[in-house]
Length: 133
Image (cartoon, rainbow, N blue to C red; front, side):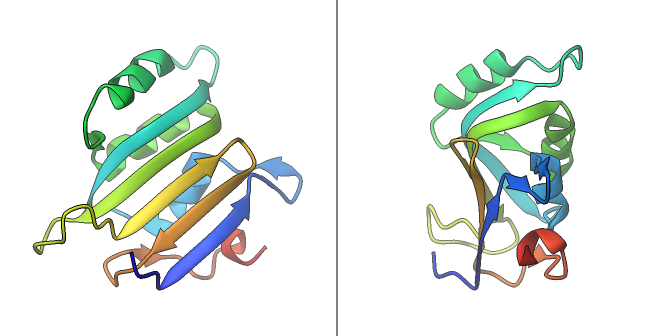
């Protein structure tokens, strides 16, 4: 991936835990296909999200579990904390090089988020305070 943008965002930012939902809010991801390729998280109690099922499905699926952007946003609402994850966004409107994601979202050991984008279709809210903290 040739990166146009690459951001490292501490998970503990300005006194609070930065959630997956906040990271996804920076991305206009509706025109992309999303694949969850790594996932370890803690659910919001009583939200009804079966984290173990998602973790098993991700680890048992070659190439990642496919989500729409709206479905990713719904999952993010049910997460209290993300420990590790990798979410890849692929352009669906043009042929792509196999394996070439236009957006990569990673969570590393509950310490930081990494957000990378290399394509104009990966529209990021560059004015977000998360990207300039």
